[in-house]
Figure 1: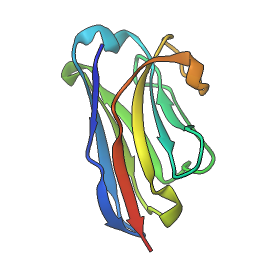
Figure 2: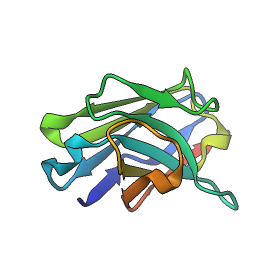
Figure 3: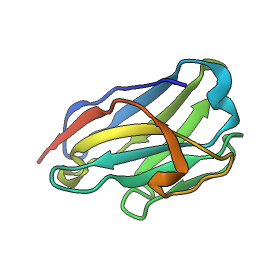
Figure 4: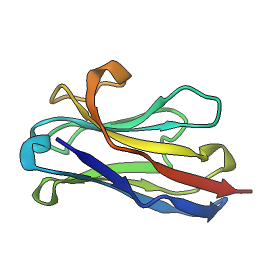
Length: 123
């Protein structure tokens, strides 16, 4: 499965962005999906995950209440709605396909990665 993440850009603090991640085929619909980010000089970190049904989600504490993950298996796409953005949200954002149907937060649980999309939040 190939993943294409897009929707990043420059936004002011307090603003919103919606990231999308398109999968190349329907294989992805049988797996959980996740969003990660990597800020300058930082390790890649888990942000959010959604199981293969779309009914169960998980969030890192740093984005809980501000970000929302969803998926549309008919469109082979997973989304990340980001609200109340802060300067510290500036990073490259990646989507990834899990090896499993349920949500896990470790990078090693994911085996296909998109190329990343830059999000810059100006203060």
